[in-house]
Length: 92
Image 1 (tube, rainbow, N blue to C red):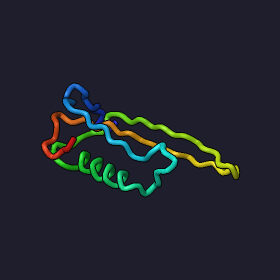
Image 2: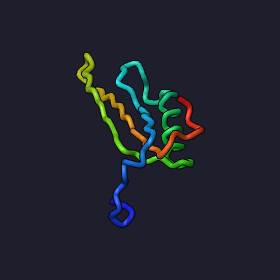
Image 3: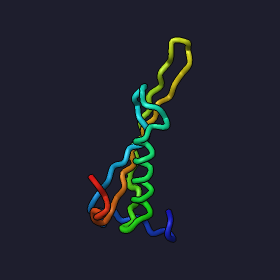
Image 4: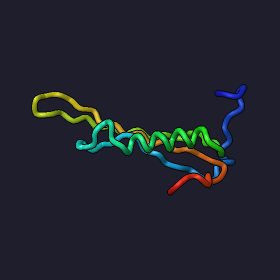
């Protein structure tokens, strides 16, 4: 734990933003523009005022095997960022 053993109190969380990175779609590429935008929102949530904290994470993946026998792994990670209140700059 950080902060000298003092844990993070979830009772102060009044708003949760879910931000998904990646995709389980075969046609979606790794350099998809939505990933860049989602990463920018996640970074802003963790650095701007009011500063959010990651309170949860969902990880999903799928392994596909092509006709030639190659395996492709698709991954999607959803971060749950908690705030004391909804940031004014956050668009829904």
